[in-house]
Figure 1 (cartoon, rainbow, N blue to C red):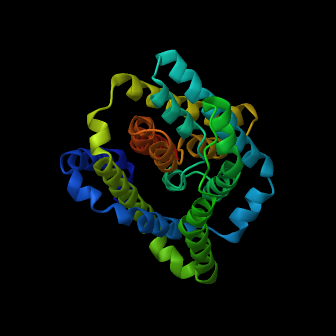
Figure 2: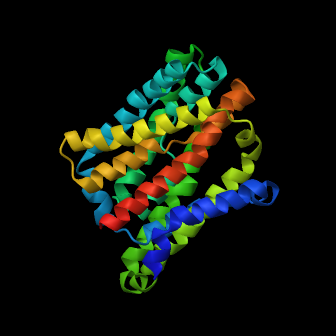
Length: 301
């Protein structure tokens, strides 16, 4: 019964997102709940992990380098090429490139967990890409946009520490100390993660109601293509390098789910509201596409 509920989470996401669109103010009022919810989900994921999971990943650092390479070499290039192909305005191209130059988002860890991927690998890839973004995001914005944008280094590092590392490591410690007791509640954790990510998507829809109301078709197509190309490259490159399917799906999700919230903040601060539109839409779409993929992969297992 629990698995059936979890497997239907793209439907729950669609239903609640539709409700959120027509009740934007109500859901937007929960904005401050996003970070605590993500931290709680990370904590619950940690309760399914052991130190051995992290040790196994650290023995194969090349796959982390592969993911970071796709993240910062291909994703910005895809964003720029799609913008040129669709003839997007300078502002919209700016927003696309900012999304492409971003690190992996913390929501990717949740989707990876629901997709039965390698959660320890996903977490370490998020940490690695966030650290690399400190230098690479300003460099990439200069290469593609000819403008250097200062990245909020301290804020990014605090976020990754408070939302990802501390909750996950605390959960892992509890699982190591009380592994038998944790087995009782572990079957409930995917259900909690499912409804948390569904509620977060609804909050994001509420927060971006104004942006969604003025989106044009080219922006929708651009975001869809960018995310799809990220998913394909994220799965295809490690598959060509003969990694197992669990690793391929993990890299796929990590690469295609960007820290679009940061791209929106930087777009508004240094460019324009229009430049924030691709990131705002990406925030919603990458959760939906990731959820659909997670559903597909859960059914394969």
